[in-house]
Image (cartoon, rainbow, N blue to C red; front, side, top):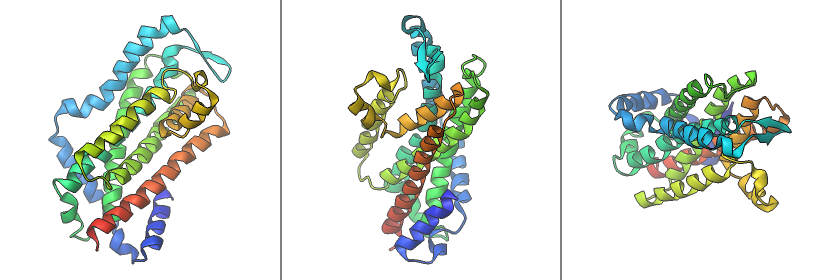
Length: 275
């Protein structure tokens, strides 16, 4: 449904026959990415998974006795169980962002890979969905790997926590589509640093290690605009069993990210290569 909506928006804005922009062959892009992935250095591949685990061990178990329990929805929650869902959401984000930003930038500006792809029957939407789909899979794999660590440790106290995996897929999809859209407008490698400058404070201040209530109300409002804040609230609500309509609102935030990201990515690739 989301993808069909994005395709319709792209067609309406560009006023061209749909098949020129979407041939239904995005799987070929993902297959190419998988072949390239198999030749990657494993240390690079697993870095996005190891980082959240290290944060869990160092901050979670290192500070739990000093911090004590946290209060979520009026219920006491152990500190390690409090930060675990935040790190799960961050793991999904990291995997998606890496492939949809740095990898896409080099393919677009240095390898000029998309020039060749779009000289075939593939369209901009095929490229966008293929690259975003691969980034989504990477984010999903990081999230599953992290879940494999935290579940045996008893850090997912609610049966609703099983839904944290599809939630992580949605989060990865949102970050991947939006990340590729932003990257497609970048001209130099230095501009990629803007993404890193944004990601670090978002990770630190989006409720990963302490509740947003420690901040003034005006700052809480600003932080709630960050996508990671919505991701953390969504995953934390599921893993702790705090089910409410607010979780649907967090999910819809990422649906909007996906639609907007797909639209602008397709629009940009069309402007660059389909003139």
